[in-house]
Amino acid sequence: MRPLTEAETRAVFEKLGKYIGENIQLLVDRPDGTYCFRLHRDRVYYLSEKLLKLAASIPRESLVAPGTCFGKFTKSQKFRLSVTALDFLAPYAK
Image 1: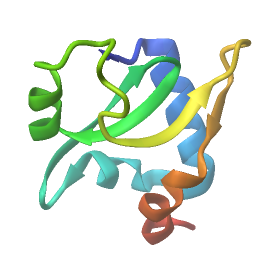
Image 2: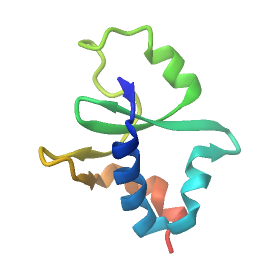
Image 3: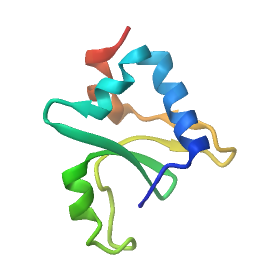
């Protein structure tokens, strides 16, 4: 599990921007804590900083899903949103 690179972050935020616009900031800085996006096995996960610290102690091979899967990168490095992201995107939709 690693942080997103600049190109990956741009691809994720462009896709999210189509659906929730300027409300992307509300996904990261929530009232119940700070959340972040991490990449694990070509999938982008949305998880809290608290959970991120706990997941760091688990070996990569044993880690299945550290948070909520927001989408994945295709082989051509395009980002596709997953259905599991709908619960988080629906309150901020345009």
